Image (cartoon, rainbow, N blue to C red):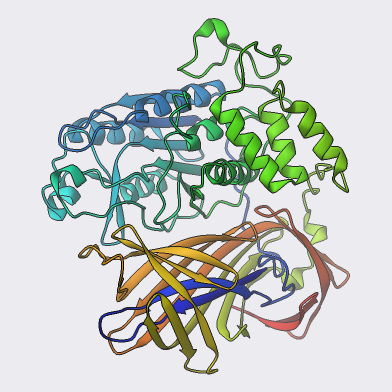
Length: 562
């Protein structure tokens, strides 16, 4: 995979610097083209005990007393609650809750969770990040100051810590709070939008409705009458699909949201952070959601069980959502894009067009069968354990940590860094790396009054400050201090951080994770990423008890056992 990061340089003075994202080739090993599927990483698969429960707490806040009210957070919460009930979750639904009621709901929920349980927490409403922490805002919070917001709101980290304390096997936190500044009508200069990247504990995953600096769409335009936001409507659709693994659900949700947002010239890439490497299904293979399932916004008489045949096409014209999805599929013109459209709109007036486009593409898409679960005999003991390697990739210092277990799973964490000097003016930046003297150039521009978009030869990223400050000058934005962004490259989410200093120096870092299945025997290895679906192969040899040499498409590297 190629991921290059350029950083906007800023000259001390009126114009400041800003990071950008280019495509930096991540060939730490064994494959330059795989989005970091080096060798295989694996974490121990935890299996839920027979008595394990599926529990969910769903909160939707619309009617804010001291902030701008929302239009569909409650509808989104009801729809998600219904979808979870249909997949055998025991759901607690709370709507328009104040601070005390929200804390009480969390305390009660924590007490219900036991070791081995599968847990989903969903929140739709206003949220802010303060000092790198994310807060969900109850309907009665005033928000007169940052300190008051921290005291009178609920930290996302608290929810994650509670579930870790209870030893839940799997915890998924879904946060649909990437909307505009909730207190802008009161003139309070709090963070406008975007939640901070989060570090999940083992067995946990966090899904945001949008990435850093992005606003989640409530609809696709004035003619879009769907009661649910764009992210939620896609999420509940994928949750209902039998046989989709958790990783596939996340992949499909992110892909479809990106395409739908593009159809209305908007950028929205759901953020995703995960430390979960086991198996989880909303609806297991060969099963279907409970009969009679229907989202809360649909009358029960119109409900159609997932396993039922498709209903005949309606006599009215296509919906705004359907038109937007068609435009997105048409723009992508890929097998996957048209298949997603056909799956979501099987009776569309555009179905024939989709069939023709699919037939015209070179190869029809065939779903790859799930790779067989590795057994202990599939994994050479010489490569089981935790390894690390350092290299220089596209002039970036690159450090990779990965673990391989006897279960045939892998987990890979890659970090890339660079320091140097920068200059910027009139929307153009130039950076010079301290070690390699590599020069990178690109452009930058203000996005609203709090974010900066940095663009290099292979892409762009929108950065938000780690600490809220004065509004940016749209004509002459200055980006000093620490800024964060997320970007999707090759199916993997990268968390980017840039620190621009007044003396014209900068430090940049980027981190991503990958995981999937792994086999190694007879000096041959093979990995398949659960996030990208990409498969890579190569050879290996044990040098000694500590060092293993791996070879792949990108070359050869020696990995040291930790």
